[in-house]
Amino acid sequence: MEIIFLITGLLIGAVSAWLISSFGYKGEVSRVEERSLILEQDKSNLEKNLNSERQKVLELNSKLSSLQSDYSNLQQKLAEQKAEVEELQQKFTKEFENLLEKTSQNFRAKLKRLTKKALIVLLPYVSSYQC
Image (cartoon, rainbow, N blue to C red):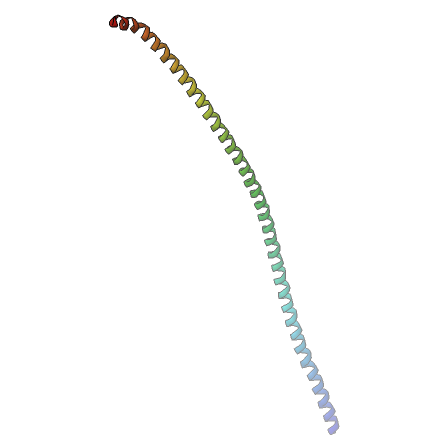
């Protein structure tokens, strides 16, 4: 009878050990599965954030390219306008010099005529005064 108790005890111990290990293993498996699920959700969220940030980078690069193109065009336009202003300034300077020369010539011609007239008018008085 002792052998029956011993075999029964061993069977009960084996079954209880199996049940305990099976529940413990299932608990461990459920924790691993839960942790895996959480990690998958985190991974999914991070991928969404990464894609969003990549999209922002692409948009910003596009805007940067557009702004650089606009800046380059404005720089070129500014250079052209500076050249036009310089050309106009030279043209106006030359026109002013020409106008000044014409005015000077006219003034000298008028002065010469007036001097002649004055001399013609004064010459008889001067010649009669000396005689």
